[in-house]
Length: 153
Image (cartoon, rainbow, N blue to C red; front, top):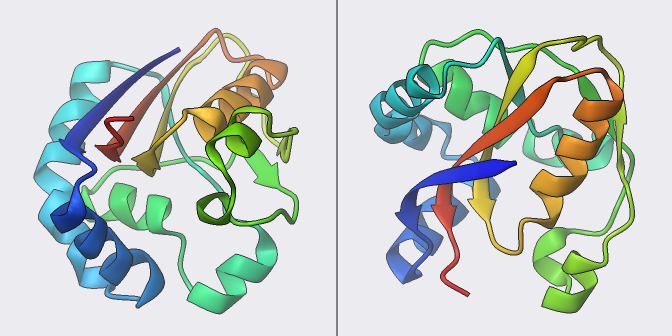
């Protein structure tokens, strides 16, 4: 499981992602489009998958930021996993994130396929690891991820 990130998650990037993710400034996805497209093509995977949101969070935001990044880059994606309701990762401590229980479940077939997961932020890697586990249960041969920003800690 490898992750590549476009940027370091610093104060400036935190502000941009917060505007995009929590204030619904969907147009900000377009500023990342060229880099997401370039990195996705370089990853050379069979399928692209967004990290799903819990249903209540999707209803609150009215969009999935991971899907928005993929769509802004002009790429096709498939729904291979679902997510149960859970507490927000941003409200958990580092230890709680590392010890997170599975909240992702396979809903599609990825048999023998390499899958690229797109998400916004990589902090502890817990979300990506749980997503990868669910994708492997769906039959994926390998899983890679691309995130917009990665925490230095």
